[in-house]
Length: 123
Length: 123
DNA sequence: AAAGAATGACTACGGGTGTAAAATAAACTA
DNA sequence: TAGTTTATTTTACACCCGTAGTCATTCTTT
Image 1 (cartoon, chains in turn blue, yellow, purple, cyan):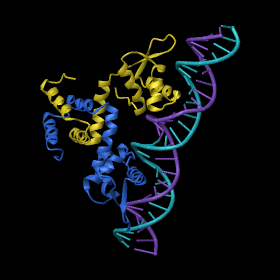
Image 2 (cartoon, chains in turn blue, cyan, green, yellow):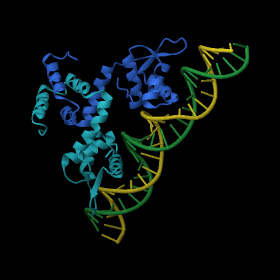
Image 3 (spheres, protein in one colour):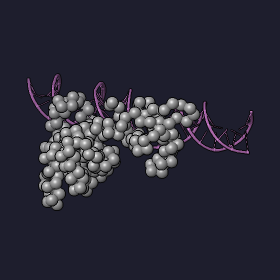
Image 4 (cartoon, protein in one colour):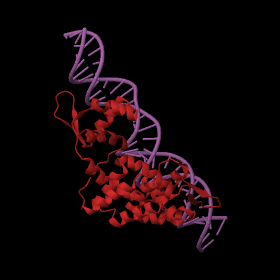
């Protein structure tokens, strides 16, 4: 998939990924109103756009639609990663920036190393 | 600074950062036409927008303007880093994605570790 | 069933972005 | 210096995004 998820849309995807179950819009309306200050309409618009883009889908429809994501968070991250590297001019530059800003700690680095040693299965 | 640099604009900044000297638009027109397939007008538009945003500046003006960047690549990277982490849900997740995709190698990781050891001055 | 509340669909609008044509100005060449 | 080539500015336009108003529909609750 290479449809774009906008920042605002992402907030919705995140909730869907987190909850791991079909959600009615009303299930996260409140949260988004609180965390993002969104108007009810705004949330509905974003949900509609995600639906139009084929990124979420209502599971059957009696009455109120319950949505599920059609891509996993991992898929999203892996695909975004590429765009980000493009923007930063390489993984190493980005990693260095993260280290310099103190967002990637030495323990994190150890973990990455371990991840390597184990051929890539750790979390 | 917290003016946004769009993806297209970034291509221009990158050339300016790379060349380390004042450049005429014609100096990179060809490259961008080749690598991005841009029309001459497009490049000019982007240059104008960068100028309007105060991100580049012509050095004196006899005849053809020669531009220099007003922010360094490091400044840019450091400021963007935050937005990226936001999007990826943390530095570690992002780093893991990079490793998984094979964009951050074990040697890179060693370098990061070294960077740490030396209190942050390596390149 | 009627009134009121919740829900969802449709419409809108201003700003940014990618893309470029058209118009204008400046520089070069014969 | 006129004619031509090159550079710069102006204008355009469609699409995406954040944001939300409004209208229509569907529950609820008397």
